[in-house]
Length: 560
Image 1 (cartoon, rainbow, N blue to C red):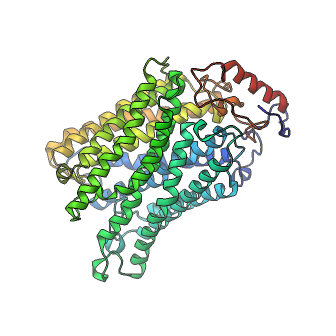
Image 2 (image 1 turned 30 degrees about the vertical axis):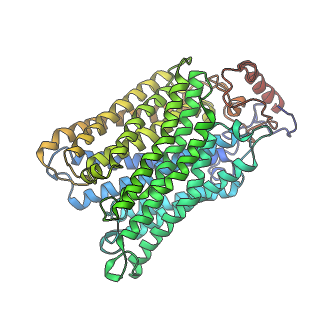
Image 3 (image 1 turned 120 degrees about the horizontal axis):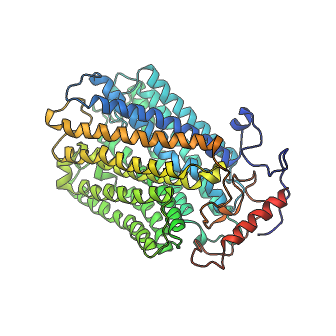
């Protein structure tokens, strides 16, 4: 480590000043330019979104306990699943890992003191909050009943609900994603520490970089699409409504051109998290590092070429459908590269099953099921039968909740000591991981069976023979809710009562583990110089654990 930086301040107790103990006022948080604080602001917001979206999901499951629509009316049920989808997809799943963990950890991992454009970073949070407020206001005023996909011409002409308000909220949130993507791309290109070459980057950074490319290239398309929906709804311009000379299938092409790559905006950062966790808790470098890194870029590129597999039943050309089907199968290759390489990394590793590793293993199992069932939906003949059934619901949730949410929770457990400077109760964390995994499978696996038997999604009444599957799903959702509730409880407890975290509680390798917990304001007391390869777990003389602790002590002494 070089020693060229000026000495940051200390607090009144002679301790290094960090991002948590400077500026206790609420105003100092609202106008902060510190990437770490902005990540925390995002975490608070998406946690609130998760709770509200989870409430809607609970109401849906309660309604489906019985075949008759005896809890809510059909219109209310439509609004419940619409708002659940809008909040969870646009305001939780898409921003959660990039905006929270990406904002907090990624600049530290590359040795930067902040992101390239701190003010742009704060603006992206304000745009996210503005879009979220509009979505919540629409909920209070009466909600939206179009489904989260806003299919036209119903959304643009016929829906008697607050579609324009929600669409504009998602529009603003899209610009938040674009600003975050631009910021991360420039940060990775221009602000890496000396010696941090492209092939020394942690795989989490590679995943964030690929995700940012999708954000910048794809989000403008859906933003313009939703803007056109709003314009047609307000001014009856003929874009999607056939009555005015529009084409409703055009909307689907434009919407899915973004929304399938958006799946990778959600899942690619999760891949990066899993790489970090598996390397740490198997004490091995990731097998085939360069293949895993380039597979993220391959997924980002190929993701723009498969949107048509959502439209096999819309009447598009059979030959176009065959091409989309083939490319969809092909995109499974770079995804499989990651899974096989993680498995090879685990082979003969010194594996410790701490709570982050439990979430990583849960991710691999659930995402594998989600990915394989996606191949069924990519097959033309099978998809015609399964289209718009509960099979699609189960597949989507296995990928998004079983994949992305498990990865996000694994990353949160992994970096929580670094973020807060506090440790959580490990035993409760393991119980929570088991509850989440068990509850998730009990919730969504019966829905594969329902879908195969022909149960359509988005119906609030159904034939009695499907009731047993819905009861199993509702019971599983209860267990899942208990797991999430326990998790939130011990995280909050740890903020006040948790033991202080050491700089490197997992004996992990990487720049973020060479600074105090929580990090100081400028991240590093001096500019780090990287002289080791990525994940040097099997090369102890490159970056031994005792040297990491020595570096941390030197930084703290330098500060005081």
